[in-house]
Length: 456
Ligand code: PMP
Image: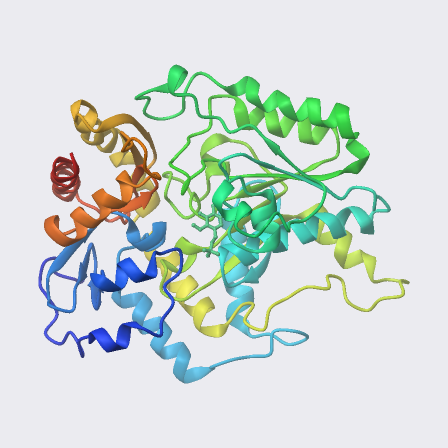
């Protein structure tokens, strides 16, 4: 690796003064509190962030589950620099540029089955809304326009577009917008049960039967009204919920039987997080569409997309012949397949391949699972879950307050123990860059323990 961990870069740039903090509205953050004691990073390299004061912070979260190759990797940085000087932008509708095709082919080659066609967006939210729209338009193009119902799952996160929050299952992301959502959406039950799954690493044995709820929905609404089922193969940001053994297989079986499209949201699980290109490959279950983002460029430039099957793509491509419309899919973003993002994506996929990072995760997984279970006896820890290079710790709630133990631990980690943790209510999630060493895994566990000690 071309970087030296723990060497603070010389030039950390200008510091942020308190006056500068006012204008920027920080997403998903209590702004007033944050601005009293902001958590800022100014540089990053490999496994570390550096604060404006030059303090090295070990990144146990790959940013937001996205910097899978580690930060500021030289081949990616250079590819972006070169691309920026060569072609800043190509119109994305009716025109394109060579790297878009090259990257789509590379991604299709990584995807299982006949998931051969890639539609690009910029964010996970865009990819998810795109997949839902493709599902509706696909059925309509086939003369089944009655299939409009979408089915998501409780405790799912599919981004923040109106499609994503509608099929998503996070109550706070829904109720704050006064219930203004897509009509005709249902939710499968989530797959977590502390009673049956506590302190399980990998896939739990219990819970495959929860997929059968889909049969109940089909019986209630009729298959002819249902367009698609969307799930994260492993729910990530709602606290790492690995799929019970047999669960995804059962969803595939039921959706196939009833002509319903199955969409895997692999925004987190894609690009090596579970030790394979995609979770679909790890679990041997091939959906009709995969959405991806984050790891495709190792977070260096925003890029996302939908990978669709031969059948879906062909349905659209063929729909123009003899029709009253001249475009196959009425959808796209100005920055779909942006040249800088495509260059970053190509360099990132090269790096994953050349350093064997997906295989590396598969090799590390048992050691990682052992290491995180070390925190099992911590008085604050009520459950631990793990799959691939992820982990979640449920912390005992503070009685009578909104869930905040995870946020407390995250703050303690950053300010006092030089570790970046990811908090979701009372849960702490870990998802380090795939380059993490065994020594760094030991360090992550030790510092996480210190953060938990401080909160306890
Ligand atoms: N889907 C999943 C599974 C995610 O985890 C996320 C982001 N964490 C999204 C979609 C949304 O991605 P973005 O924030 O890039 O819109």
